[in-house]
Image 1 (cartoon, rainbow, N blue to C red):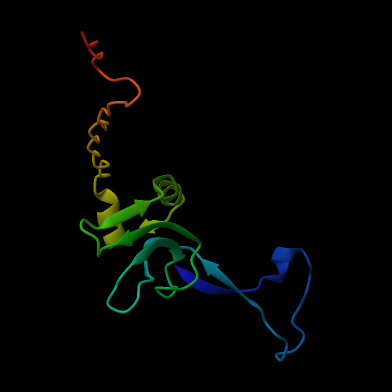
Image 2 (cartoon, rainbow, N blue to C red):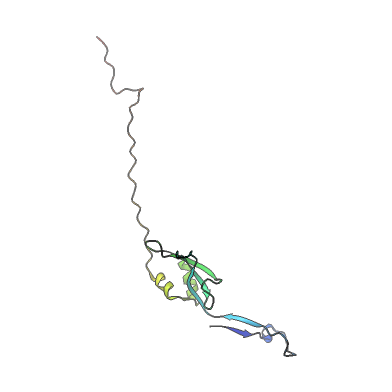
Length: 140
């Protein structure tokens, strides 16, 4: 939950009192909920997303706390790159996964495709002019 809390003078240890109704009253912004969700960064009709840790009330592409991955749905198959240890850290500290990020995070980690081994390079044997294969026959 996010809200604004009236500044408490007693919290800073100083005894301040409000003398007139025209005095400025300070408010502190308190954020209680962090979310891990997608922030779009692609061009028009070319979606590409960052997976970000952000306060729940912020705009989709607002200032994030940390970028913890990327998601590109345009590749086949869609490419995912998560910093899983950082996501686990934020979830352990109370961050909530959005529905879409939760589904993407639950997907198994794809094994890297086995690169076929290149066949060995065979160099053709070139006969050397200095050493012929047969000895010349002496004339009789």
